[in-house]
Image 1 (cartoon, helix red, strand yellow):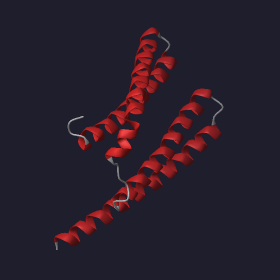
Image 2 (spheres, one colour):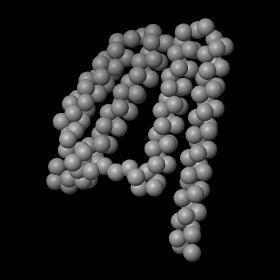
Image 3 (cartoon, rainbow, N blue to C red):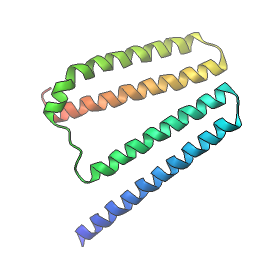
Image 4 (cartoon, one colour):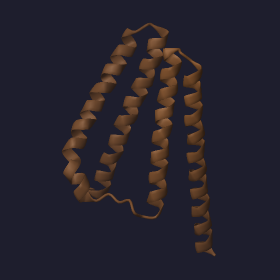
Length: 144
């Protein structure tokens, strides 16, 4: 009975992820319609940002489905081979965050501040993703 419950939970989870992928498709279509309906550069830029994010979300959701069957792995050798690159990229993202914060503080223009705020959060997201890879490294190499 317990295995049946786990199988059902996995199937339910997969259905939820697939439904989410469909919602992302609808979001992409909506963004395209929004862009077609407006000539405003700000509206079109925001629609493009959301569209691109939704496309990336679909990719991540596909990887999640792939991970369910155990075909996605991360080995110590793979992480060891890119460790220096990860550290270097973390420094780049840290610099980008600082630049974004400085420019945000220096601007008083509402639209510019909103766009800078978006960029700042995106840079923070990049830093977080790279930090998560470093967390994998620490998990695989507990004394690293």
